[in-house]
Amino acid sequence: MTSEITSKIPVSLVLAFSLVLFFSCKNDKQHNTVKTEEIHFTKDGELQLFSADSTLTKKIDIEIADNEYKIQTGLMYRTSMKENRGMLFIFDEEKPRYFYMKNTNIPLDIIYLDAAKKIVSIKPDAEPFNEASIPSDLPAQYVLEINAGMAEKWGLKTGDFITFKRNN
Image (cartoon, rainbow, N blue to C red):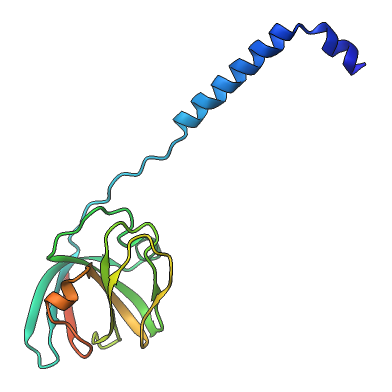
């Protein structure tokens, strides 16, 4: 029965229908592209970095990541960050931490801090888009991300510490 119906449909009609379907699908793909907007810095507070002997090393403006969405997104999709800025991740507890650079366009120094806000490890120059795990050397409750090279430039080392205050 199927062969009888098919033989009665003109080849030109089948060809015309196929072309309409092809171009219709092609146009749908063009309209379904996802456009991401660049996320801009929002100053949530100020952070001070101190050497182990309590000498002020640097003051920076920070964004704070303290909920699930902000922690998961971090600095993803950013194309740049000014030298005097960073992102501070705040967790509920101190434990081993692992970060990665998925969807992160800029190289970063990742600084892990314990519950007392002392630096326990510095992972310099994390490579953009690299999804390999970047673990803390010791348990951490805070993580500070800054532009790659800043930890060395500012002379940061384990045992140094931070203080920060949130905007009102």
